[in-house]
Image (cartoon, rainbow, N blue to C red; front, side, top):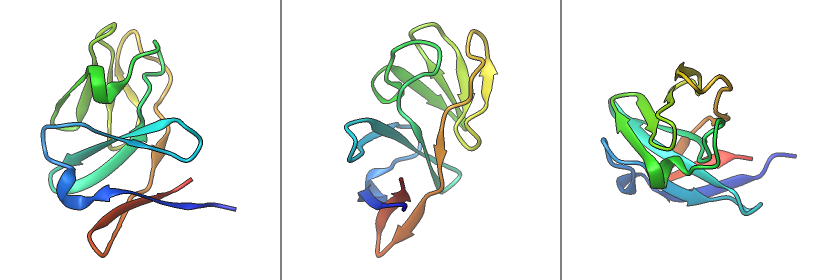
Length: 104
């Protein structure tokens, strides 16, 4: 059964920045604001062991992992640049009473 996890307030997710939030299992998600909407992906790059929130650069809807310079579309999780070939896990985001939440 899915568990609802409140990650942060919506105001904490700022356009042009990447916010990291912990999950109950000890992993993290990366949160992005793109054109006013909030998106959540797994924080770890699928190519190398690098945190996107700590090592990534967001430009529009594309996040670049600076470990090997691969890129992903944060709205879909799909890789958009080599060497990344495996999509990021994405989580549908809802905002309830100003809080960002996902189901895990």
